[in-house]
Length: 244
Image (cartoon, rainbow, N blue to C red; front, side, top):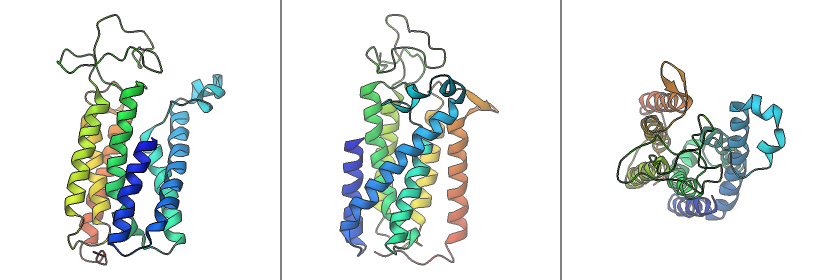
């Protein structure tokens, strides 16, 4: 998470300089976003595990594991929004600045998930790149059942899949950032791409379906994609142009 925050901060600083804003705002933007993101990610995780949380709350509060990314997204967005509004930076312009940073930070964070083995791996597989997380911080168990995997079992390393997706999304946003688009375009595009990426990778993960055969993350992904598409369709004619 620390490396993800540093990478995100570097990208934000570069974009603040390029767009004519004070680069010294990088630290408060990133620090507040990270802190609020961690709180949001933990709160959503607790909500998802509410019955277990009530039985043993301290196990869910004082632990290095147990974060849900969409909670982190909402928390981080609120934290960063507070800082940019306080410093009178137009929200849509700031969102465009932060979008590529968020993409690459998310990918680096997933490398941490892979190294730690925090339970967000995928289904059992025989593909050559399958991984056995035998030293996972939550134990080498099927997260959906809590039953230990037998020796020799390998699974899809979905954190690596998400890292690759994030690098691609970052590359797209970074290559388009200097073009003359309406303010907010990069952020809405980021929502679309990250929503589709998460929707896709869930087919290899083992999160339970909550409705119509789709997982919670897939429903969030569809919602993000829909919001991004609607905002792109609505904003092109009316939004002010981005600083370049």
